Image (cartoon, rainbow, N blue to C red):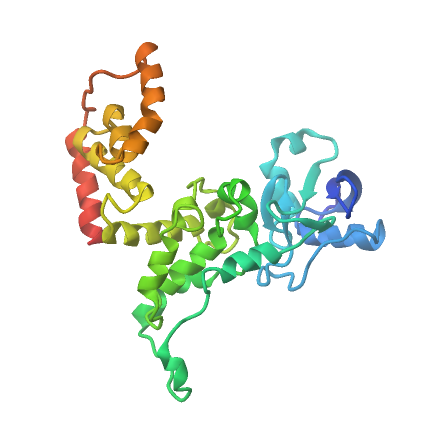
Length: 332
């Protein structure tokens, strides 16, 4: 039995060089099972041949058709009309549902829904996304791995480089030096690859406040939008865990921030704010410049009566401490 068709309006952000972007609406008849990519095809073939977008495999393999659908970066070939209407309560209440399509964020727009991916690929290249091994000098030798070693690479190996995580990345939006979640997820694949002989150098390279893992703001959006379940934030966190095991509190402010936070929560169940700034920014009173930088804020808090003069441990501190120690022991 044929699926019932319905009218849906697609509000598409259109743009071309030297012109300001503007929305253009197209109302077409589709069914709920149609993918967004099928709807874009219908608009281009039947209503407006000038509409420009990328596509290739149409089967969630190539990543070419990544766009923003109702404000969320996604693959147009994976999402369908019914799903988008269900996700958008406002659209459900309209006589004719509306779906908004726009290009990916954090990348220059070439035309309509097509973005320039050059920065995306250049950021990936910065982490040297290939296995480094002397075995390359002996072509007749295979790169043998055990099933257990290969299993470690399954999650990150699913990345199709669609750019959805890059588009949603808040850190990339405010810091152009940050290499992006796609690159750092690939980084963990190389750190965990038994065939790679550059592990220690990689870890040192990724231990960077602006470009590397500490530039991540942990907003979780990359995990939310990844169509392949790669979970870039999880991979970034794993690299951070490796670095934290190797470095002490004096290594950098980013490392000290994490270690002090965990230490204070273990001691009191939550963070003692009186100590946190002094220990992280002031480096346990060793960094005079850091101490002077937070002195004005401390004085303002004192004079306004907002500086906590005492600290009381939270209820359940022992349970919190036990949980943290259990996790730390498991990681070792």
